[in-house]
Image (cartoon, rainbow, N blue to C red; front, side):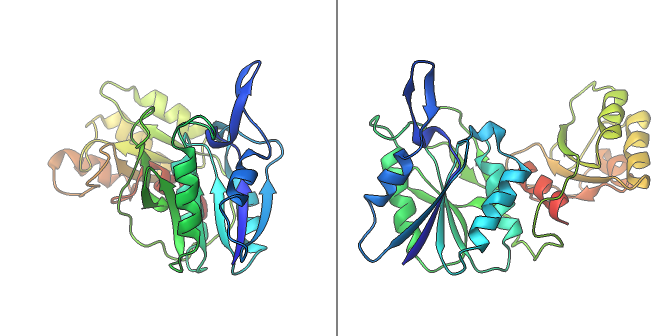
Length: 281
């Protein structure tokens, strides 16, 4: 079997230093190689420098995609920090849609060699990489989760992730991440419309986390800001602030104003998946 490791950084490959935990080259690579059979050929691509996942973004997703595509037919394990795992999962799942690749994301809440979850997660990733089903998955806490709809629902527990069911991604218009100014904005009661207007003035588009199944404040000034942004060609995509269930436009009269602005319906997409959708489509 041909296997590619992309080591981006993250807790799984950290070690104690004088300044505290920091990513170290070679730890993940050695631990992975020790779990492979003689019939597996391993190729490693190690980010330089290794990154805390808080610093991972579009240029790094492109780097991952370039490595994956330069090894056609190989299974891929991506070692990654947990804080932005959901964004990278959505990015790879959507960008690789239709390419019939098998990619396994792997991280941990505790570093290798500390008696925590890292070894078990890495072993699960190796086993998952041998399967034939295509797709992007996360190996974590004894489970293999579809990575396109990941939600990190706990900041400390070992069982930190859930996966929300997403529609199967169609082949995107763009296979790489271009320079776009996008963000996720969250509505809250009493939010001044001028704040949303100021944010949108700096963006090419945004994901808007709205209430429940698709409602928003009936504030004429806010609705005008959103409608004006759509008319100006900015892509706005709505998702629910609820972790599960998604949007149902028309279910409540309180949502009529929101949907009259021309905002896109993100359905059951997670905020991370909706952001990637804007980036690629």
